[in-house]
Image (tube, rainbow over all chains, first blue to last red; front, side, top):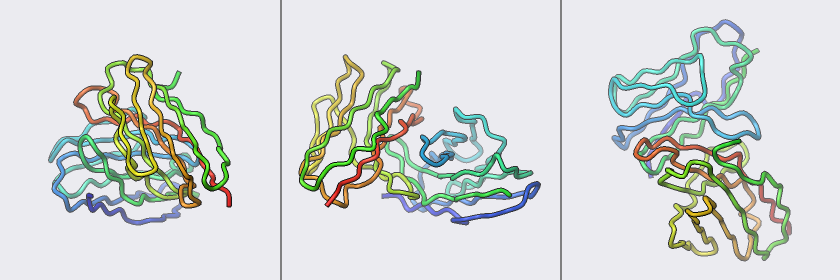
Length: 109
Length: 111
């Protein structure tokens, strides 16, 4: 099973702040993903990467951006947080089978 | 229509009961199918892959019917620890590894 780490686990922040959600994996997987999940709702893919310097937008439109400079690291950034960004953000890695990090619960006031 | 549809439940069953969940998917080109388990406020964890021939892992049996585009999960002898949300997951387009999730079916096993 992949070792995948997300920080912070919880973040409460004011509107307009820039935030970066961190995701790291130690398994050397090329493929990494970011999902967004609201309470009681399904996960939606917002970004994915098939390797270094490769990033694509997912099926759900998001104002966030991502980068993939190193294989093990796939951070997600929101330049100006808004209350509508309040959600859980889950990072995953793997190919045919995906393994998830513990998630970041973001609350924008 | 959602690409992956599940009955959201909740299913409240007594310990020891057998419970079945169903899931339908709309893209006939889908290649890979999975059941994930998600505990409250936690990340999804792979329960099992699903194959046309059917597969079993202890008390859990999964089945895929490609003709009907239907996936099932059977849990026998339910335990309190089985209480969770069960997510049906489909790889939507061959080779892209892009998962499509159902909304999940909530199971509560009662003592």
